[in-house]
Amino acid sequence: MEESAERVQFKKMTETPVSKLIVSLAVPTVITMLVSSFYNMADTFFVSQIGTSASAAVGVVFSLMAIFQAVGFTLGMGSASIISRLLGVHDLKQASKTATTAFFTAFLFGLLILVGGLSFLDDLMRLLGATPSVLPYARNYARFILMGTPFICSSFVMNNVLRSEGKSAKAMIALTSGGFINIILDPVFIFVLKLETAGAAIATIISQTISFFLLLQFFLRKKTLCTISPKFLEPDFRLLALVILTGLPSLFRQGLASISTIMLNRSASVYGDAALAGMSIVMRLIQVVASVMIGIGQGFTPVSGYNYGAKKYDRVKKAYFFTVKSGFLCLAASATCLFAFAPNIIELFRDDAEVIKIGAMALRFQAAGLPFHSFIIATNMLMQSTGRIKSASLLSCMRQGIYFIPLVIVLPLLFGLFGVEISQAISDFLSFLTAIPFIVVFFRNLGKNNAEKAAAQNEN
Image 1: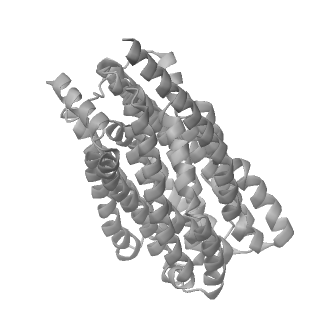
Image 2: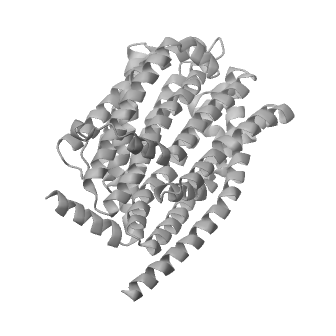
Image 3: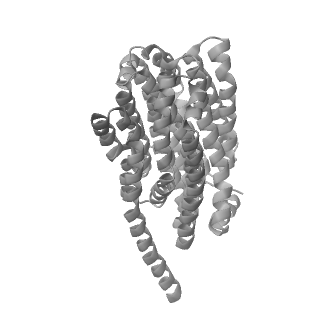
């Protein structure tokens, strides 16, 4: 029965027209990413009604949450990339072992972050950019967020395993359910129960825990190809190292996102709580729009991995270019709206003239760089899903690390607050230029692989 299901899935992933297949996988993933971003945005929206310092606190803790995401995406995307290729060669047992190893490792890392974070909470908040007036709000928000870390980290793994199997609709059901619960609970805990920022964090953790158990039940009820079970949990450090190594691009991408957010917060805090609040709102808005491209990319990733493993290289190429084109159209349309209505959008979150002025300027510059994300993200995910770890890792370091961190340090020294506002847009453009030679070399080599495959078939 399991083998029959696996064969059916293999046929679907390697024979369905790539545009239809990516859309079918990407739509649930995009919905999931949007709902997840919206309930994070709900925290920002409702907390911003408390005051400017409370709004800034969400931006401070956002960089802490990026650390959770770094762990979850490293193990989740690393295992998913391996699993999709294993399913491409019909090795279901090793795929289950990979999923189990990643799941329990993520839960353990989550526990370590929980203990370490609570032990040094105030120092951690100051390090992340909290000013004295922001610290009480950030402390209350982060304390409860940390308590859910093990569930958050391991949910990322289950989510990506489901997507690697081509079952993104199941992941959507679990994550969107939690997201809607978060949106409902936010105003109840913040305003009705008067828990302020702590209430937003409690609502988030309740929703994340619900999503965790909804994801887990798919594996326990055997609604998946891979099995997560202690029987597959063996001390295989080579497999764990391979998962982490394959997930390094995600670690660099998310880890550097956390560091860059810290750097951005610290640079913005020099200009007061209004600047910190404005940049916090912009970061959340851009995350919502960028999540569309990430969702499309995660619909593309299993298609790329399956077909690369099955040596169907023409389908890999078609899938990549469809992903870039569709992502560009979505991001360009969104960027146009953000640019045109930037002040009105910021005002929805915080009716503070200084916050609106700073946020609108930063939002317009970041909106200008959004269309480049389609090429940057698709190229990065192509490299990762086909096992090009060095290339994927280097590309992951560009946007939020190699380019952004020096820019957010140097540009404010030259241009003041304006330098903070333009740093990310310049980094996006430079990352776009850097990705071009990587994709040219990849497809040149892929063409050689295709020629070798054709020659071998002719000989047979």
